Image (cartoon, rainbow, N blue to C red; front, side):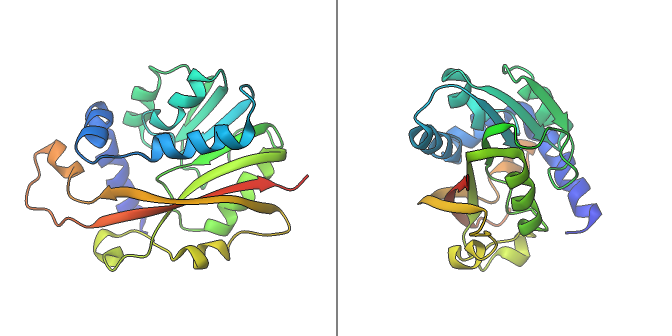
Length: 215
């Protein structure tokens, strides 16, 4: 992905940030923000700790963690999204790409999430390595893999077969403890927030992976 396309995506998400939550849930039927945290809470079975929310957006993906008593640090590259996220009780926010050096301590997080962002990640193995560095021993990671789509080039995103993506997971560092499939999003709808019509619509489904760092 070129720097121009990254800048365009950053600008787009900043523009729709104030309306994103309502539109994503009511119009798109988005549910990753519930399914991934709910599974992580089930796997952890302990209602305290520190969470790193990578590509936190407006904060949707941390709502269950806030309700369950976790401290959460959020990182997102969109200033507009971070501004909306400030309405939630994050311990700290950082506005930057999650593929840059992460400004948080190693081996300090009980849970790391990366929801709705692997479509845009240029170096999945490196980001997985960063996640491993930030997790405590036995810590959990939940992420959403955009499943293989013929619309990948048209949408300018990365998609994967689950089998291909799993090859990026270093089995010496992580155990795969669960996997689930569900609807992700449909292109074209978010453009309607900005009054754009007639955009092509393509459905992207998610395969969610849940990883545990080896002790």
